[in-house]
Image 1 (cartoon, helix red, strand yellow):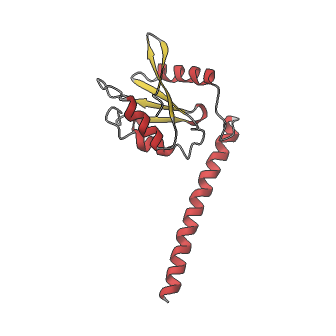
Image 2 (cartoon, one colour):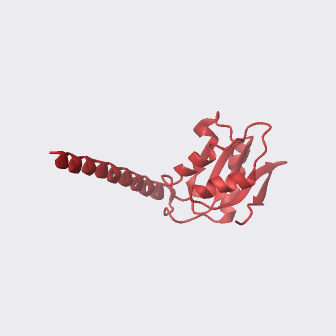
Image 3 (spheres, rainbow, N blue to C red):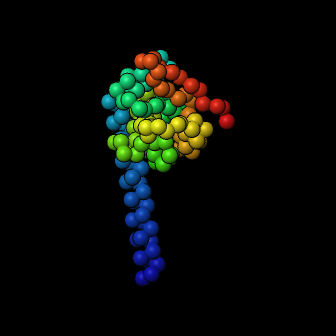
Length: 152
């Protein structure tokens, strides 16, 4: 009887994991069909710069990070988890201060007023989530400012 219970228990766990994976794959397919991109295709740097400028102008007090390979909405959730715990992130903002734009490979981060962004810590958080941080975008005098992250 104990053996049967163990088999049933682990079978149910396996079904739950398969269901979660299937749901993530469906989200990725929906994203691809809605955006016109495949989940693995990145936009050009020119398109990303335009989108970063537009998003940063709309969200004062924010910065954006180009996270190379961030094309999958379900996989990008780890980025929010890793970045939202950083001390300079304003977690009082929607989505814990971290918005993901997988279509343009951008992570939009609300910065606490008076805080300084630690690029090394931010780069490590994004990298720990599985995506290399390439550029940090900000706005100065209405213009997009791009700073490369140090190569590790």
